[in-house]
Image 1 (cartoon, protein in one colour):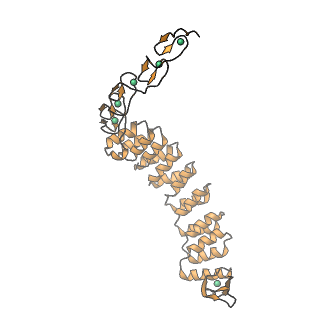
Image 2 (cartoon, rainbow, N blue to C red):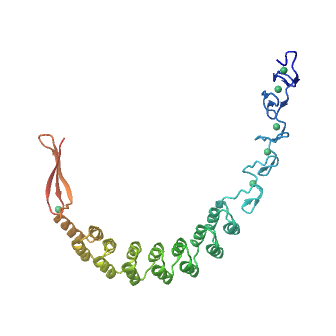
Image 3 (cartoon, helix red, strand yellow):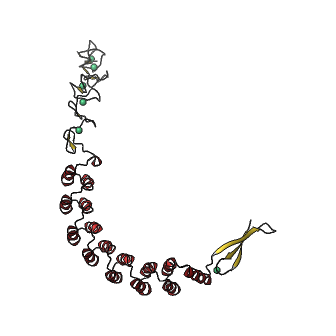
Length: 335
Ligand SMILES: [Zn+2]
Ligand SMILES: [Zn+2]
Ligand SMILES: [Zn+2]
Ligand SMILES: [Zn+2]
Ligand SMILES: [Zn+2]
Ligand SMILES: [Zn+2]
């Protein structure tokens, strides 16, 4: 009851009892409230273009553009950049790699940009072999080095990479452009990574070396690749008849031309995958006929429909006949 005989007003608020009156507020227009009683009046800034002179608040209108950037609030826009090479010297935006054709700018990006994905994209568009070589040897990111190696054509550099690079995927990438048979033979026999030996084997032409790899490599996929590259029919026949692993006999069989030999494999190989591969390699019509007769003996016929209809009880029937051995059967489909 301290204010029974009158309040002690300080602006809108009584200092003694805390009562508030709706006059003499201390408006903070930037905050839109009275600083003493917090009554709301709505924000009213003192705009200077996009920025309030008092509180520094910004709005997205009336910017003071200088090229791509607002001089007052630093807002950026994607137009009127100040290009310096491939970067905007104002906002740092980079050109799309697709839009850059200048090899010296591409070289600059490939060698110096901090973003490795950007370096890869630029490297993929480079043609200068000496810059590509430098990147292949020195970039700190293996994926960037790989994209450079993919574009190299110099056989002696590729050979050096295949023999000495520590990264499996780099050596594998180098093999893709390697045509030097000596270097490929070296990698196919000596590389410690299966993927690299396989890639090298896949480019070899030397038949006796391929046979050696097919017989001796300790990785199944390398051996398969070697057999896939074999064309020497004597070697293929040897593998198809004698290799311990059925999957490798099957690949060899699929490449054999000698039709009687294929029939022999079909009749005698213990593994179905090998027999099927040999059967698929039969191309001569005479041997195809012989193969089909053999299948009939094993109960696999080549059926064709000869008649169909309904019997007096309403069941559907279909008469079929084997084209090869003449065996006839009727199939029933009850309604
Ligand atoms: Zn009071
Ligand atoms: Zn107030
Ligand atoms: Zn303000
Ligand atoms: Zn602005
Ligand atoms: Zn810019
Ligand atoms: Zn038959």
